[in-house]
Image 1 (tube, helix red, strand yellow):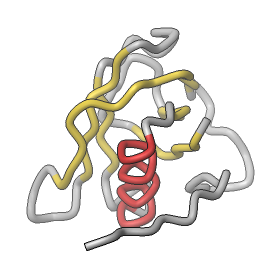
Image 2 (tube, helix red, strand yellow):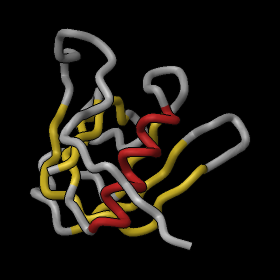
Image 3 (tube, one colour):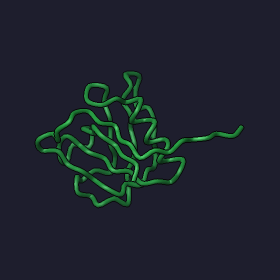
Length: 103
């Protein structure tokens, strides 16, 4: 079975302005990616990044992110070996992912 993906340079955006205290971590290589629980929480392990936000993983919660779109972008990045930029709403809180972009 052949799978085709349309790779676009877009992100999951959840607000026009940056969140106070937010942090951006770039050049994240993805490891484990998937659904983390039955409530729709999405998980991804991160490596080879600039470590600006002090996170080796990210979680996206339905409360602060469109988890379906975040998971889609993460899966595209994983299958195409692209790095991602992840924005956290709080520096050092790896469970506060709210935006993700293909790099």
